[in-house]
Image 1 (cartoon, rainbow, N blue to C red):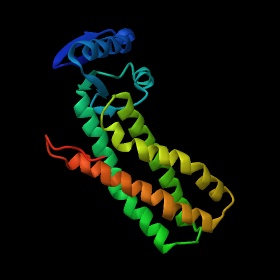
Image 2 (image 1 turned 90 degrees about the vertical axis):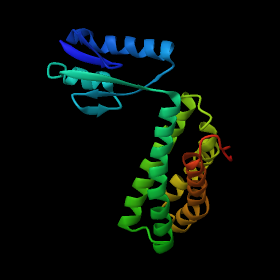
Image 3 (image 1 turned 180 degrees about the horizontal axis):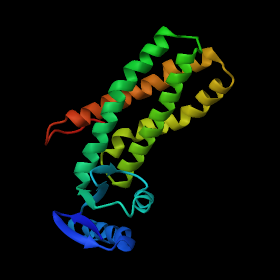
Image 4 (image 1 turned 120 degrees about the horizontal axis):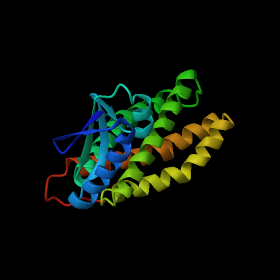
Length: 200
């Protein structure tokens, strides 16, 4: 038996039925209480992805699974705060790399490009999550998301050709301004007081 905690209520569930039980409870809470699934806490470990795989892998060791449901507003705020944290770190780092290493495709340049690729992927995931929530905050990131999608093929081509000038120009005059614009918009929303209007 595995204990599943749902809304402060502890329920014992057969190991073989635990994942189906969680999905059922998740759907009930979504329909009846207007909540959305955030993540599971499994024996103290926060699990955000591949829940069924994780549960099946540790099935015989798991003691407690906590179902974390939040309001759309709470999840939207979490996503925007995560995006803000990323952008507040990434934008100055990218600006510094472009200004200090202009034209040099050094080892540190390629490391920064890998970090940038991971970051852009995260931005796309944040954006998709906001869109899936049908959140007004999606409009905060939608324009920059489209701009990134449009410019990335050019950057990838320049990087593949090891064209340093074009790569740095695209980073300086396209990618950095897009991320700066996104950072400004996200910070505006995150810092916005209750009742204030959001500027798009």
